[in-house]
Length: 536
Image 1 (cartoon, rainbow, N blue to C red):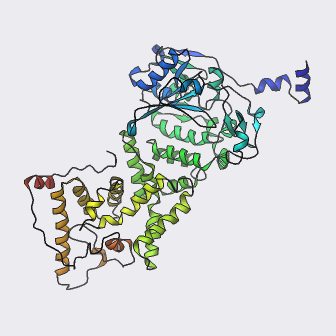
Image 2 (image 1 turned 60 degrees about the horizontal axis):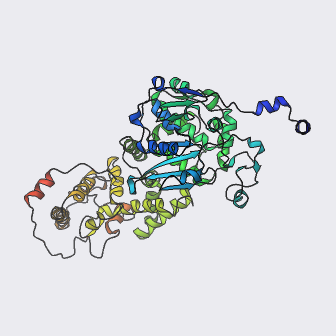
Image 3 (image 1 turned 30 degrees about the vertical axis):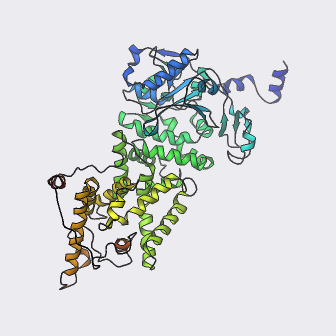
């Protein structure tokens, strides 16, 4: 009686309260005879996690995008597991398990080591909570960190969820998920798919539909806007499309992304570009009217996606993901921002700056303008710098420089970068071919290749100059770009970039080496392998 009186005072009528209750959905068990999932597509490590949780007396299912992919016959790249065990209980069951996250506390169960390791992400069923009743903070994750430390359910002033760690039953966990096709649970032991929101039907009809009111769900977590684009791009080749009501609020909701931490947006941008559907994602952004405004660096990618060099890098990334090869965000971002680095370097050379400091200053300017503090000082930034700094050194093919280059940790990425530049005509293709042969040769053949370049340089130095060669036609007989451009250009500056004293000076006296070529070396030179991919 007292509660009813208080609700009446607060304007909470029974009808209004009923409208606020979510539709939890009715549990439907879809048997294997209906869904047809091939159990051979399920990762054995995910099965082991489910089996271990079952043995300890807990519920456990493969969940989310993995179930969706299994239903359409794809082998999922990642497997997530959902359970009614708490993070602490999950962690206690596995030797290598780590609780991560503040906003959502989950467990990473790790199998293997090094580059071959696999992570199975385990989350606890979450309770449905009315965000209007959540504790509210005035700031965000950083400014309100001390306040949030003791909270399990909290939102900011816009309604964006900052903490969500209240556990509940599976039916409430299902309504908390974003899209119907990602809200199904698969038990690999009984081979039953559990569905609460017609996700199975939507998979069959190829519909991407938000659970609940789309505008409200985007407000709760604006990153869902980017996820909607990513799923539409990934699944469009299979005939999937966003439901009209799910797509309608996307553009208007885009302004909510301004309150999302930059680091999280950076990670979501990388998912758009590195899950094998980067070009399709860019097309979806344009189609939905979202080509600008999600994230500044993503704006640059979309703007430059049709440029030959960036387009080649995006295609190469999609190809490698499709072939199951590793991809590095440093390589793709280095390609996207190369025009800024190259042009800034050229401007400084025109101002008579020395080559190496000019390049480093150009790189610093690009990081400051395009990336900022998100990843400008970490490993990603270091790898990008190495790729860029090694570009002019590829012009140095005499002395000890080539031998030191191939031993650099980032040589393969830098070479692949240079190979893409050659593919679009920015550098001579013969230069890329020379480095490919050099990188795969033994020491004897490598020395022969260096000696050949030196001999060509000596011949050019000794040849009488009858007339000036037009700049547009000048090129070296050995495949290197001849230095006939103005001295202030990056190509000209590359002649002395990073060289040890005296290296590359064709006029300096040198001790002549006798050229010896073994039969094996001759055979290798005549049949070079065409591989030149990073991480292949």
